[in-house]
Length: 347
Picture 1 (cartoon, one colour):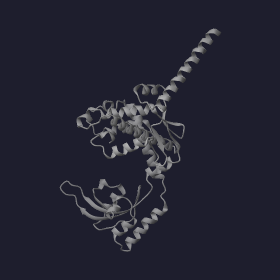
Picture 2 (cartoon, one colour):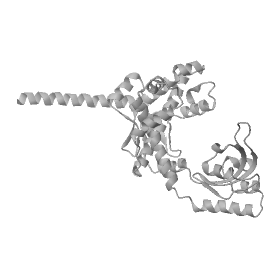
Picture 3 (cartoon, rainbow, N blue to C red):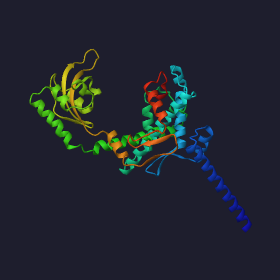
Picture 4 (spheres, rainbow, N blue to C red):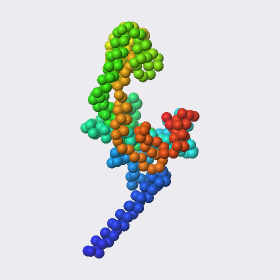
């Protein structure tokens, strides 16, 4: 009996050594040689390696990054894309660099998704997986009645429905939950309301709307003296729409609060509904922005600890993103994004 135990222990020890050596080999191929060959990707499925970590204990798996990148290639190489005539070739030296850019994009998205899940759970926010099926149906709601969602996902991504839900829908549901929580609980800086109140006072004192807009307003409309353009009722935020379509031409509103900030709007002109065309209004606004969800998320992420493993990428703590370690690749990416030259691989 003792001899049998010794043999089992010996075999177990040998297996442990083999497993350790295997893990070390995978780590060396991943982090020192930046090897993305099919063999190394297969090995990473057996011995998962982190591509990045969030707060040290939360992983972004290299195997999942590999799989997501394959899904992206699958999309670009699909018959639908081929029929469109777009040139997408990842086999050339430049094509391989473009694919590396997309890999960086994928890691960035996965890191942000992980951060969002952490922030959501810290606030006791959860998502119901059962609702993910509803979200999936909504995504393909406009498809033909005989449209097979699972088949389309397989054709477009090479995934089954469960993988699509876990990779695409669940992260988006967490983002929606956290964003809703933010806008329900965010207390705006009192100085913002003071600023819009001062703008309203100047309007009440008969100062020109365009002058007040130049002085106080934020956002793109500021470049056009507050002018926003023409809108139907469903093209405006609910709070603005309710007010704008009850006002007369030339009328200036009171202060309107929306989730994104404080507004004062002026109706420049009105075109009544006619021959099937909806009523539209021409608006100008004075806008003072609240902190957005994106700004808050960046602020929260600055309190977290991020690490990117391997030599290809690094964590840019200033911009809060994954970036290339190599300056030449950063330059190539900048040039490629600004001059796609018919290559849709970065769209």
